[in-house]
Image (cartoon, rainbow, N blue to C red; front, side, top):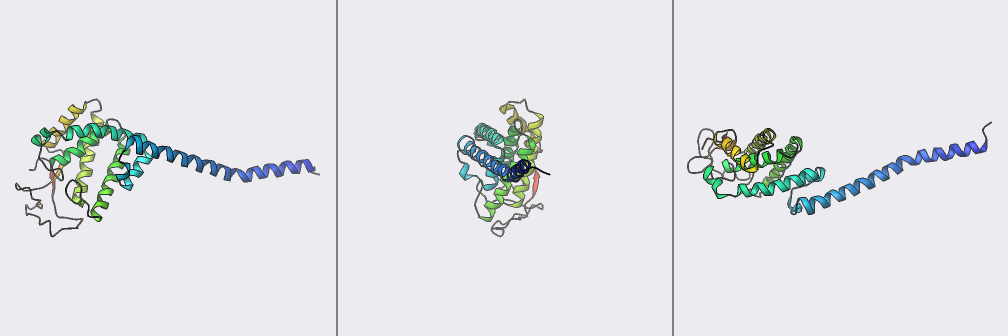
Length: 231
């Protein structure tokens, strides 16, 4: 016959077992909220002073990868000093959207990031940025003087991949050495640009000038993606 004391012990243990899942869930939820708060503070104050201006896709990436985001922001600041040098437009073209200058921005920045941050995280960042570009298209907002389109997105992603490859292969290069490597690669045709005629107008793959007014607010425009030597 089971004693009354044993029955009380069983009841107490049963009660504890029943309560454990809810206690564990409460602890987990509290810790998750605390971690999210810390990450948000880190990203907004240290990593991205203009955090509120990022797209929701880029914010999500930064929150999931706060330390990588901090490195990216720090490296970006250094990269912009090279990108804004007037001599760069003398070595490449002057098109910050669809041209060699645009290709340089994506290849060089991604290469510099890849020296310090994992490829997987950077690829996710690139995708997040391009998702933001599609949102800009929907809202008819410009990036680098033009509304984004589908071929521009394809060009950016291809140049990002080239940058990731160069960064992984050349982790020990200085920023200046990496800059020159990227310029050489672009001038030798390793990157991608969108085809233009000598007047600077977009043309299709048959060299016919594209009337951009006809394709206003169109995501798919019959532009032509070519190697970065095709000027």
